[in-house]
Image (cartoon, rainbow, N blue to C red; front, side, top):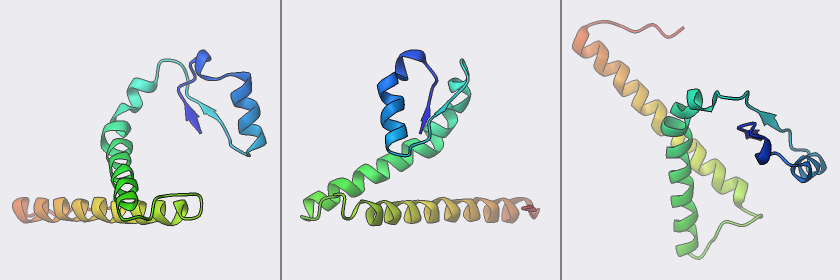
Length: 107
């Protein structure tokens, strides 16, 4: 689990619970969270919206997310979300090539 490293966000109880549940804690260095905000906007935020939508739709359909199906439903969302991002990237690269006549080398 990643935290912003702010002292009040990490308590002794939190460390004990993490250890007891085999959770590794990572604290970001002070004063660097602003550099990571693009991830919130471009990656974590949209993914969270997709996950909440899946949870709500599942509940409406009478199959709410629970400990028996959480991994399956999470993987469904993550795979479709990753597929969408890759499709957008391929479209953008193809559009770039079509408009500018340049091929972008990936790697």
